[in-house]
Image 1 (cartoon, one colour):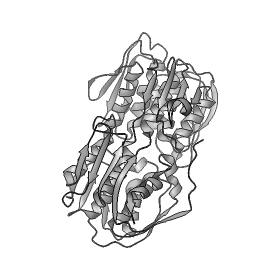
Image 2 (image 1 turned 90 degrees about the horizontal axis):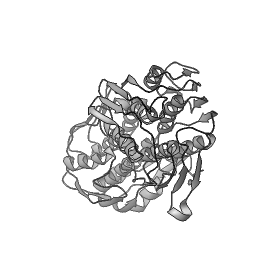
Image 3 (image 1 turned 180 degrees about the vertical axis):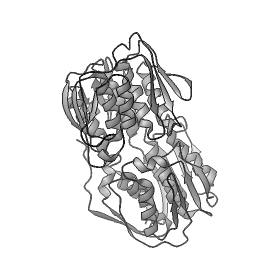
Image 4 (image 1 turned 90 degrees about the vertical axis):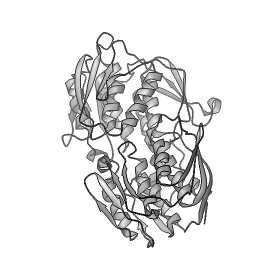
Length: 442
């Protein structure tokens, strides 16, 4: 289990005058959970460096242990955060398990697809909010491949029961791309496990626009490191070739979390800076590094290195319309930088916020309004007006780590705030408040 700091029920944060310093980022959640699963499915043993230690990765590690996959803590020999995964070669030792996965979408979706493709007797469940997050599009695609998956409660949502049938490779399977990119990522990672994959290619046809495409590119990049090359003849087609199978590359280093970097880069801009994040740079495979480019376009002074990004105040930040389709997680931080912009900021193509850990559009609008901010919202957009004066408030976080991390930055906008349930950051960044405190001058 992760050794997390203790948290009070509420965390008062005093006014901050400046932000400057360097933060070493924890490992990316998206890369950590993908590489843990790929390592478990591969032939051979993989040493993973800089694996995130947080609630979401704990849920994946617990699930792999229940499925009979041996994962060792390799920190003593390979550095902090290292894990050594003994691959199953695509056939899990345990064919019956009840898996509790909390609210970890990066565990629920890929494990559902992988276990359904392999076949067995598995139950997948989570916290109440996870049972409100849709999974029907993924299940429909799995049904089309012959898998047995049924709903235990409401159709289209977990909890799920997986049966013994397994999936059959070959042919074409459609899947929607406009609800969550995790559905496509999960299907891609699972297809090399299907029966007949040695002799038949399978084509995935993405129906409608594909949101969060950079997250799918993380998936295909990591699959390629494990020996499976997903062919993309066009933007809406993905082909898993015949003979695809996962083979360990030996070692993989998990990049620092680019989504987590957004808070510290924003702090550097709001608090003068410079603030540098270590562990992710210009050549990252994570699409959320584009958040730094957005800050630069708005007027911030942003600089890049091979494994670092640095931000400081530049000219007063512009407002305007920002298309966030490629950076949905990092985009939440733009709702906070908008408080210090010279004109209203409109975030568009953020409909996926509605089905995250909470309805993030509604949650952000409500909590910003508590601070005296004028906010408008629509089905997939939000407009935040600059706020020359703010009022202090207690910010409810809705058991959503990104709400807590975003609103902690409000102290750089001229007011103290109190964060309700600060422990929700355990999901992806248990040391967040300590890391933020190190760069702030109160």
